[in-house]
Image 1 (cartoon, rainbow, N blue to C red):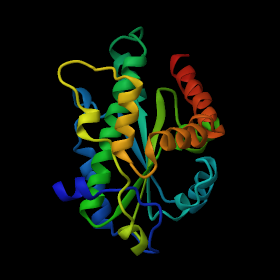
Image 2: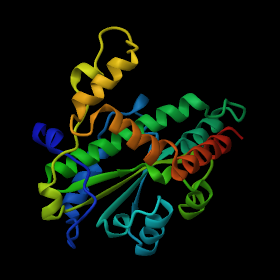
Image 3: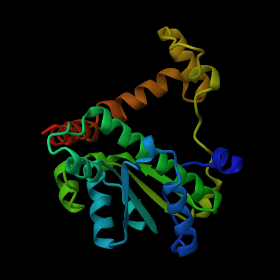
Image 4: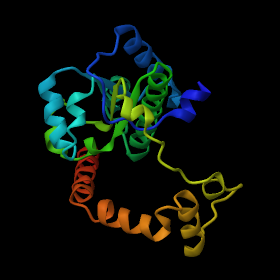
Length: 239
């Protein structure tokens, strides 16, 4: 398991090979055994098998063709609607799920997704998180018939990595010193932040990384659409 944790990297290209049912069951059961707030399991997993749906997601999730080729594609959905209906049987006027409930559901779903990703890695499979499923709120709500008090939080694509993907180096990460503080949050100076970036990737340097992310992500159309869609999901939740 330690090897799976430290070896994992995002895999966006897969062999034309199905994930065996036995391995798929292990991945799903690993997700279901994840830590969960109050043992409520505030999420559902949608196993996307229809190729037409995969093809549509490859377009709607910021035009990423590899989504359509993923042998195993799992959608993790925050889900409070079932518990709310059960609670209303006790008190028809009980409180509605609020923002705190939404956040707990997001935590539950993402912890489950990470368990699935690490289990897949331990089985010789690769995976990639796709946060772009937060976009196109109206389309994705209708596509998956999502009722009130549900919300998609991430897609997880899983499959056998190609040889190129196996040999591709892991992307650099921030150092422990950059990420871990003791007892309280420590706000860093701009100089310290840039030094952390330089240590992370000396080849690109701090300014190179800042410029890349600013132009490629921070000012992108897809991020603006994600902001719009998340606001729409929150609006539906609070109605």
